[in-house]
Amino acid sequence: RKDCEALVQLMTRATGEPAQMWGSSIVGFGRLHYRYDSGREGETCVVGFASRKGDISLYGLQAAADSAELLARLGRHKTGKGCVYLRQLADVDLSVLEALVASASRARSGA
Image (cartoon, rainbow, N blue to C red; front, side, top):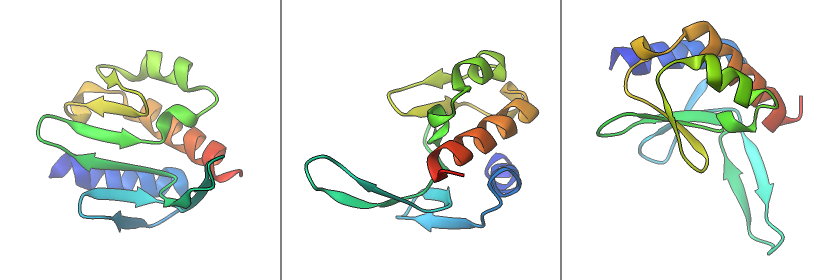
């Protein structure tokens, strides 16, 4: 719970956006409208996170132009197709995480 509260503060600072629930489990920041080539479209958060059973899933961070360099300096984490997974915030460098969130937010929101 403390890690999630700290993430809300960090992501609010980095994005300049308030936290908003997306569904029942994702805490998101900002709003992104997407449209696929198939015509399917919708809205999602620019960046966000969810506390899962074994870790914390972070969404949208790999959109940052400098994500590879920042992820290399982040600390203990795993990556998936579109997510970054952390066990706990104590495993990572919070200043690097904040830079990653800010960069991804700018990249995804077009700012």
